[in-house]
Length: 220
Image 1 (tube, rainbow, N blue to C red):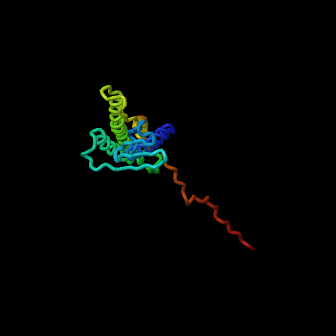
Image 2: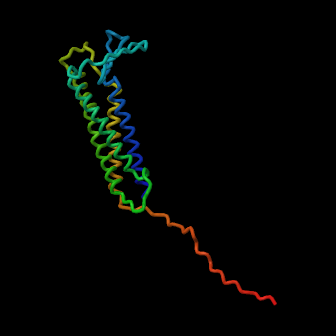
């Protein structure tokens, strides 16, 4: 197997694993949106998918979880559902991709790579789906935030929410998932049917050279 395909496979799995970690950080980080106002310069507010936090300038952070899912704003509720689905599909794709790479299982006598190609292809497809699912909630929340920030009907003295760190983690995770899916699918398209070469067995019992029969010596 070409070493270039190994590189594509390993990069795809590495990107997928990194994207899953970024998706987990995006899901759990309570900094999807941030707000600070001149009326309270010593405090800033953070909005996440699971809780809201108040951060004081002395380093004290106080967080309060949401009471119910149905009482959330529609964008936060949708983002929470889609991010949970993103993390689940990303892990499924990773579980498909890891057994499908060439370096995981040792070769056997007449092993073809149909099963590996199928697993790896499924891992790439799930990575692409995960990337789309991860980009939708962060982009939707960012779009609504931009619209509300530049809303002229709201007085300028009213504080406005701005982008938090979690949105950038979400965009990074979505891009990495798409890159991982592209690499895995590409490695499948260039993978040829092969059989693993077997080491020729060495005979343990080598044929001994025939020895000439002992000549009888007669002693007189």
